[in-house]
Amino acid sequence: MEVCKGVEMLHLNFHGNMIHPTLLWDQDLAVLIDTGFPGQMEDLRAAMDNVGVSFDKLQAVILTHQDMDHIGSLPEILKQCGTKVKVYAHELDKPYIQGEIPLIKDSHLENPPKGKVDETLVDGQQLPFCGGIRVIHTPGHTPGHISLYLCQSKTLIAGDSMYSVDGMLGGIHAPTTLDMEAARRSLNKYADFDIEAVVCYHGGLSNTNVKEQIAGLSKS
Image 1 (cartoon, rainbow, N blue to C red):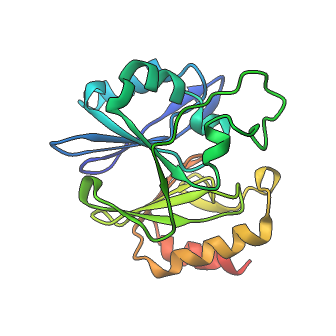
Image 2 (image 1 turned 135 degrees about the horizontal axis):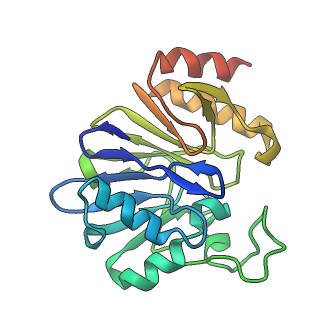
């Protein structure tokens, strides 16, 4: 689904579980935010082809956090693309993504997905890709969870800080959130941004009165 020019919310189906990585692109490069479950690289490639963006154009992967449904296809992407693709994540989730520490929620896995993080991100950092991306550290779901504000389109990529249902924001998903108090404080950070649309990894796009919706959620 096209959110706006150069911003596509992808739809990946994993055994009935629909997830939404986000693809950004301009004339120079493409950026993928989150990589789906293990084994979904070809699904990502097909989704990119469907919107007319070659997989060869991919130069950056930004991970909102360490959970397996977000980092799952990272090893395959890196195997395919090598050093051409740089990986970005928050410093607090980096050791989990790199396999130095077992994944917090999937510590039982014998061979979890992992990949090298080339650059760690901090709160407030501005990335130069596709009109500018502002990093917002939004812990709670995991310690190093980040959200991303797309400056040009005023779109918030919320990761798992919130979920949505039928175009409306549903709040924080408590069963998968490690620290609910931190997650609520993280929602308050969004008040500083002029947000016109939100992409939730689970549930998809919300673009109706989103500032009012977020304000209501942050008070609950």
